[in-house]
Image (tube, helix red, strand yellow):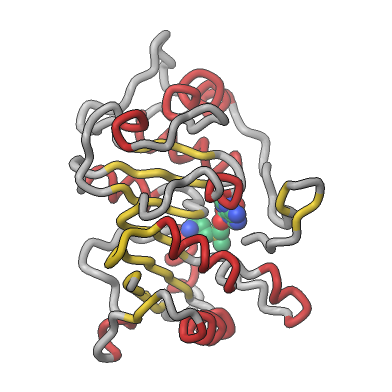
Length: 246
Ligand SMILES: C[S@@+](CC[C@H](N)C(=O)[O-])C[C@H]1O[C@@H](n2cnc3c(N)ncnc32)[C@H](O)[C@@H]1O
């Protein structure tokens, strides 16, 4: 579902799904009534203090957060940081809202929806193609970028749709701070080989691994994702590739 960089009418061409199964009542209400309070709009200023209404230690971006487990988990573990999550798939966005508000199907929906008491207001959501937001991000804006289990587009004829490509890497390098980390996880053999080659060709990043265990084991602060669980169940072992912005 990761997108290629072919632009049509100034908009990147989209190959994934924006909507899946019918979104039921609680999640629709969350999308309508709660999402606007944490959503990045066309006129949102991309500045830490404006975005999070306070100073944050690090700004981290997760691209294609899926059901949002990793994003919500990181934000809970690190209240001192600010998190931007980008996801095109509406059902995924709705799922993240359930995780952070606790409002599930069948719950009583209060008039004013708020975050669960243990949460800090440190997540902002961009519910569109992240490449549209890249353009608005200042240089060296981010401390970390997570790209977890992107769709591998395994067929050769679809290779240009893979999110890791030189064009996107150039933008990722621009918006990351020096020494900032780009973390990529994949369970797919073809995507792993592709990523290693693309990263090797990009002079802006340096692989941090010093031995096999560094990339075959989950990083310390890891939170499992839906696609990771699916891979493990089907017998595929993920790799976790950390690259430092030079
Ligand atoms: C294979 S899923 C992985 C989801 C999640 N990271 C996980 O590990 O469970 C890839 C996700 O990336 C999203 N996606 C693809 N291209 C995107 C883009 N350009 N901007 C934002 N989200 C994107 C898709 O909608 C999809 O939910």
